[in-house]
Length: 230
Image 1 (tube, one colour):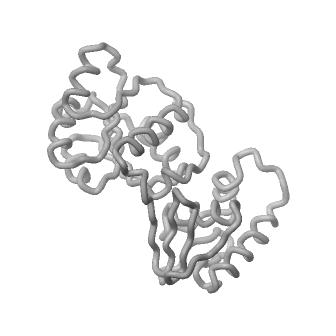
Image 2 (cartoon, rainbow, N blue to C red):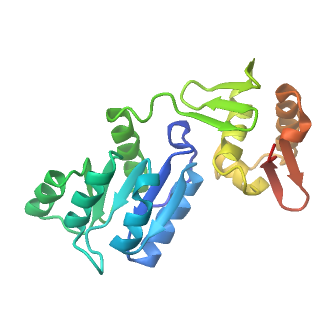
């Protein structure tokens, strides 16, 4: 898997259940999806996956699980949830693909795979199922439409620049977590940014001013930024 970390608005806030028994692959997926703005829950067995299936917006499913056949699990999850299911597996034979799709999977990706392709397939199934529409994330007084790139505070519209919106979307991806300056640069700019780091402070000050309440974004000195609990 080639790991990429670019933030993409139509995946920010999407709750992804990763069902994968290989810890190294699960860790890479969780890290890459987190950097893309997703909320990730990992499960190494079918039993763990069953506990989280109803909370997921999208499911990435490996077929080679230790306690249940992945196709059987796909059938069970489809009976409980209409979330898109993308099978991510080393099984490449046509019968395996047919079985998984007949069991309710929406797409099938063979390992090894490119991470950019996986993100594209995730966006595609979310569009097909209508889950990419109206992707509004709410946090306290904030309401952010990630698809339309619109922001409201207590019902009042706020106009942001593209970069200000990207910074806010980065913070919204996990509102309770402190996001480091480096991570914001990686996701709101890109991983190859070599300009002055003070540019973030300039954008952050403008963002706070436009939101009308500087306390909406907290500075955790020495660590980064996070959205306030209010």
